[in-house]
Length: 604
Ligand code: ARG
Image 1 (spheres, rainbow, N blue to C red):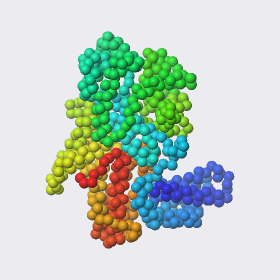
Image 2: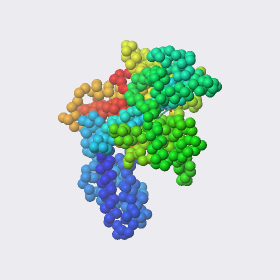
Image 3: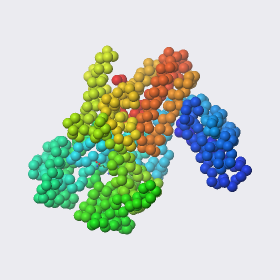
Image 4: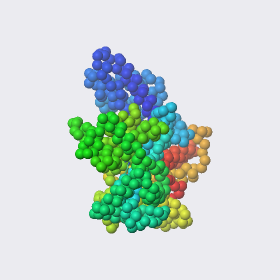
């Protein structure tokens, strides 16, 4: 209903402008805001929309808001286009204008949906260079080499993937970048240690598992902190690596390859596509970045380190934010320098860079001030083209059911592969129990397929359905429940609804035309027509939970309709129309879940 909403907004605005022009006293007119303040109706009995502008005009007009509302409505009722879309407007309370769409108008929208594979979601109109849609970069997942991928990376992966899917659906070219931590002093330690204790690991592919690597990393760190000679050797090793010396480079490549293979197993299970472009990619640009900042006069030497000092704002007052350090006293670069090089590269026009118009970073909220600093420096350095957006998409911590940091029973950090295994195992045991209860006999392939799909879907949906800004409590029991706002509930709703229209057989709507009589039908139609607005909202706010809530609400409204109105047993004309609603509901759920990165099932 996006275009319809915009049209009605325009009609209201025109009516409002006429009312303003008609005022005898024009002296204050330039100060008046002619925004009709249209929003969805707060209750279904008020219709579809309400406009609140009359209330804010009372003061400048020196008239009662009700009188202003009457004048606006009088103008609206002279507009034929408006009258074709809406029933006569109603005025409520002190001067709210309530608008209800005509049924003919809803039917027309609905008919458009039936023949539109995009379910009314328009391809973006925003264009950049050569009139093509603007390039988006999403930096997500981004685990660190030689370290285990943890639940924070899982959140980033799931949220980032869903945002990428929504933006791709809107027609943007999306570059999905995995900014892996593959560079830095830790490699010096690790390589030096491995040379001593497991030299084969640096020469032979597959000699190590990521788990071993993590253990070696821990040992190396311990030695580094206690052993002077080891420290010295590690530092030398980093220099060799940065100079690109062969044995060191080869060892590094090997370590990255081993981690990459482990990460890929997780991505495959989660159906995630990513392009790896780790920190090392920006190595050759770091010096340039510092040079660039220096030439803009942005660098200050503070205790030997080169920094950019920024002005922060807190409670309206200016204060000094912590400086962004771009080069350490020993000449080394750090996480911020790499991110500055990355943001510069991403915003630079093709072929020097990615030519991005919007760059989105999905990480835990702990990195908020890091990104605020990086974005601010990028602006000061003039790297951000007009209209381009840099956005940090933060998310809260993953907690156990006790509200503390998620841990295994023995107190260790949870490995992602174990977590996914457990979700699938539990989904399988729930399924086996249900099959027995329902007296069903299914083959093993079916059971494995359903359990895997449900288990992964549950983990993803539990994460996405929360407002990402809050901490999130991880609970297998809750995420796998067949009732409530969960993946199994939605998957099951979809299976059931598809079953209904399949039972209804083929139907040709064009010959019959749509015919609706019941309020439950209209409620479902109105909800179905909101899909496009929800998608555009997610594109803007980058909050996938909006889409989850919509799909859940849609399933509930569908259930009310199906419980209270006969479908398969209805007279022919109604039956066709109601089956069409079933089909559209199923299609909306399928596409909606697809945008969350959730695979759906035919049977379960
Ligand atoms: N590797 C980092 C971590 O594990 C996340 C990187 C996020 N992306 C970025 N451009 N800084 O926390």
